[in-house]
Image 1 (cartoon, rainbow, N blue to C red):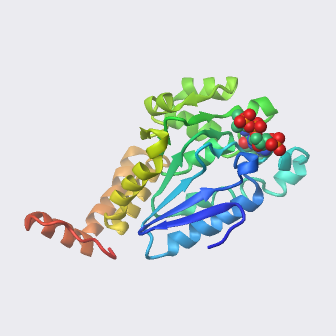
Image 2: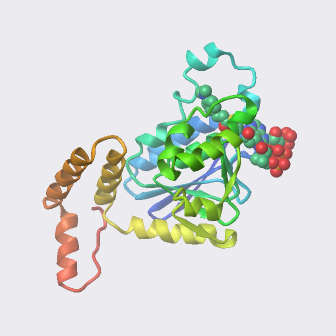
Image 3: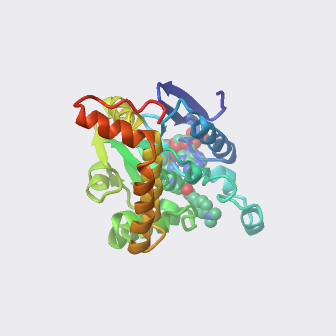
Length: 258
Ligand code: DAK
């Protein structure tokens, strides 16, 4: 796959998508978001891929929406043109696990895109922020919604109203990221995490992701009911037969193609 604003790497069952507009701090523009959607859908449909990593460079994940591209937009351009809605949220349709791997800045739309990943691994160099207020707009890709749900109202209000950036340690403490590694070993460690997931049965990983995401959209009772259906259905799958037989036979399970 060849793209103008993305770099693609294949690591066995793990596909790596790298945001790549180095001259503009990986600012997110239409072309990049169209390409990102295309790459995500291709990997989601690829039976050889179980896990997708979305990352940036060592210096920046993404410094937000492209301010140069949007500075002269009118209300009609954004509302009628469905800015953001038209191509930023393809990632939410991906059914396989997507890990966001962040080094350096994840600001504005960059932080919002990161929060659309299933979970985040960060370098100790990572900095997260929602500085939209400084350029005269509110966040437009979920910053006021996903951030408070993830780190709580007080921290989210603080970040959104003051534009303060938080570092990797604070991001881990608040639950925005799941693990932090030294910048030098970030990708190596992230690939280890991704490979651990890639060796699990992909059908179960997809069901886990689906169920966890349901937790944010429904009541506890409905969410548990939803989970229970997957659990029951699991007993009709090769993954359950292989996983439980392997445990009883004291061997490593082989979930290839499951
Ligand atoms: N857009 C365009 N270009 C950017 C950019 C951005 N977001 N961020 C950086 N660049 C460009 C810089 O203009 C500069 O270009 P040249 O001057 O070299 O041509 C180049 O990248 C290097 O940047 P700096 O010289 O500034 O580099 P530094 O290391 O000094 O600083 C920085 C790095 C990331 C701290 C700084 O660049 C920065 O503060 N960038 C802007 C961060 C920001 O404000 N992000 C939020 C953007 S607003 C909505 C939809 C979406 C949104 C809102 C509403 N609706 C539908 C309602 C989303 C909004 C945003 O994301």
